[in-house]
Image (cartoon, rainbow, N blue to C red; front, side, top):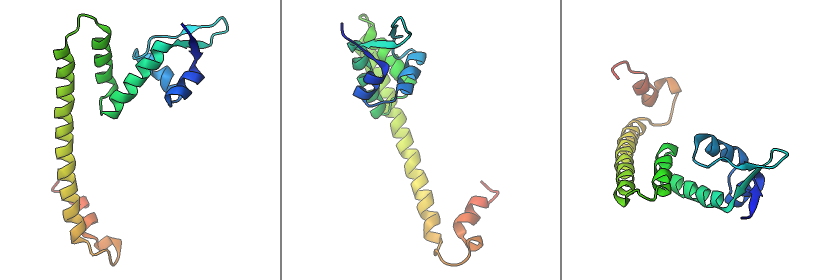
Length: 135
C-alpha cells in the first residue's frame, strides 16, 4: 500500500494539516503510522475517509454525527436503518434551524422596516428595540 505524508494528503484533499491532526485526535481518522524520524504516513484509506468526512460536513453533519456515521460504516454488522436514523435526525435538526432562521429574518425585516436610515443612531428604532428590557 502506498503511503503519503500529512502535507501531501492534506493538499490532495484540500484541507490543512492541522485539521488532519485534529480529526486524528478525535478518532475520526485512525492514527497514522510513523517513520523512524517521526513523520506521519497515511495510506489510501485515509484519503477515502477524509473525503467521507468532507462530504458529510458539506451536508451539515457535525463531527459527532460524522463519528457515528463512520462507526456505522466501519461495522460490517451495522444496519442501514441506523444510518437512516442518523440522517433523519439531521433532517429534523435542519428543519428546526431553517424555521428558526425564518423567524429571525422576519423579526429583522420588521425592525429594518421601522428604521428610515436617516438621523442619529440614538434615534434608530432598531437599536431601541434591541435595548428594550422586555425581552
